[in-house]
Image (cartoon, rainbow, N blue to C red; front, side, top):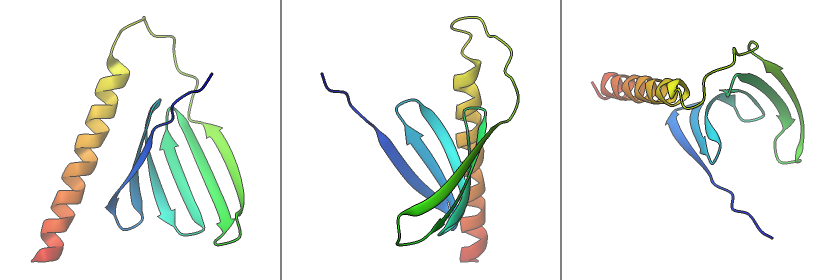
Length: 99
């Protein structure tokens, strides 16, 4: 039995990426060889040697989430808010750079 994977990474600004996957959205900030990823209540720090395939990753939970009622929908709206905020920031910085 097979399964599908989905992952898309969009560069918003130099050093900032919006990662979209089948199970959610995250944001990565950093440079080649070192970055921090924020998403799904976790912070993942990765340091590696570019071009070697060697890396070290450490993951931490932001906090223990309170149980939510099924179908509350707040997770979806939180993601939409972050996406809109990031798009607004990217647009604003892009307009400032052009002038």
